[in-house]
Amino acid sequence: MAILKSEDRTQAVRTISVPTPVLHGEDDSLIPLPHGEYTTSLISGAKLAILEIIRHNMPDAVMPLILGNMIQHLKTVDRAQSSGVYATQTSPD
Image (cartoon, rainbow, N blue to C red):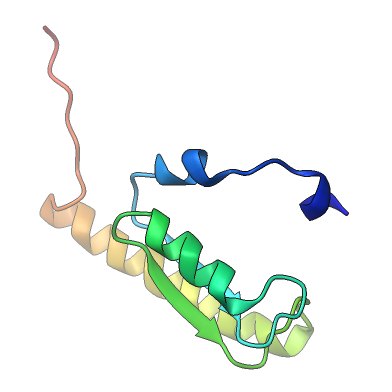
């Protein structure tokens, strides 16, 4: 019901400016895969991970997949920040 009641967040999602993983279940019957693909397309530099055994729930068996994707993402971002790739600075005017 929350999905049906919520407003379109397309413009807000487009403003995300940090490296973002989009994790989506391959057989999600509530929010089909094209929605995850669309979300990924809205965020510059986002990466889509399609998780085969996930539908629209998160049983215990899929937690290692989700956590593995999150850990890999955090390691990648941490390495990039260490090298200055994602570091941003604002200088006082």
